[in-house]
Image (cartoon, rainbow, N blue to C red):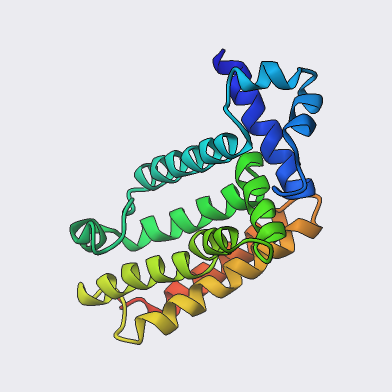
Length: 205
């Protein structure tokens, strides 16, 4: 049962990334899996139920990744102490892990591509695109950098501007990775960018 449910999620997301959410039917998903629609409905009520399960899977993966790299799981308003305890090295490691997730992890890469396809067709998808890939990460990074400044780990500056300077190349390299067979060059460029950023803004000890 569990394996079939997992297979449905992965195949559905792969189709959403290729054809778009609106362009993919339950029949398409069932056909790709070699099962009937009736068999699929024993696991998920409808296409929206599949999509909601994908979102829940993404949420769990995000939390697990944040915990693994010891960075905040929630917003600053929900968990200010976690932001105040985060180390600069953990921020760097988390950024690199995020890049790997969005470019090399099949689930993350397909989710990102689905959002890119659907963002102009649906307000919900545009909001998800912004939350996951644009304004959400910038706001999160701004809060992390501001707290590092408060603890005198980073030089005083405009945290929003610094967040944009750090994140913009990340976003560009994630997009560039779609044209690469492998992501090694983009990953190397990202690591070099983060290193130069830290050298410029960190207070020498």
